[in-house]
Image 1 (cartoon, rainbow, N blue to C red):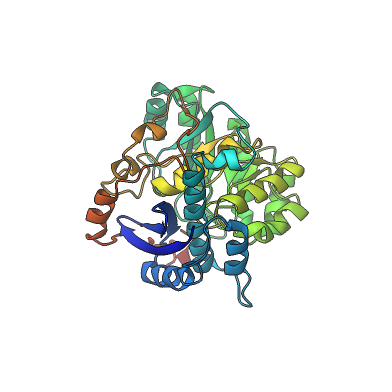
Image 2 (spheres, rainbow, N blue to C red):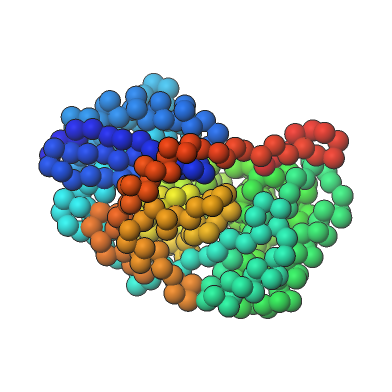
Length: 381
């Protein structure tokens, strides 16, 4: 079998899908992250695919190594392209053999996949009401953003705003729901310490990105000073990008994003190293249907995954849900807070290419928000 061609689709609001074709008629789908550099990413994807066309798609590890090992390597644009290509190659391999990808990575390690639901958006509001809705829908866990912009040193009123929000959730649903709190790297060291101390009373499931992920030593310091599990990883790429997290025992939970970290097998390697360090995994997946389908393949065969982010109805989708682009919608039909094990070949997903093509003609409309602190300085988003 040989790779013969590929097609890229820019899909509103911020998804880029890749379809790879072969001379035997087997097609594979991948997904890459557009961020705010869609044309740059698409151009990189087209340049990178020149090294894949003509190759046997079954040689996934060798193709990955060839694409990764340049003199100037890594970076989000390059690595999202490598990740999306790798996903599509696994889809082809699984389809050609008639088995789901997880069967090729050691087989199942679980019977179902626990998921959590996002609430609140970028500037959380009505958190208690939203949490109650999720509980009533059968979820056992939710996640919300901690706060909006926060300065290096900010007022305690900002801290009280956060604790009041989490307190309202506990008052509404008690401990029927586990609650993840995403700092999103918006908080700096001093305020992160204050917030973690104030949040301990609510026993969060985890706190995500309490500081920016490049500040590994600060994250390790925060982890030593709190009983709350610390999570990070959505912006990190490859197992080498995680080395300092492991070396410094900086977190309790790793969150590889398959559309950035290097694809399915690379994320599996990251999770395996985490398992050796007694760390849990909760993969990041707030994007489209292909990325989520690929992530579910990882979840099935990875024993230290304890919960999965799912992007059904998630913020940023702006009028589209990932189910709109899938023919076999049952793959994403959760029940009582769990998703079923995907049994279809490859990624287990049937992409509605006509719908993808139709929406891709509309162009992308999402851009990164720009936030400023009270004094006009740029804040982290």
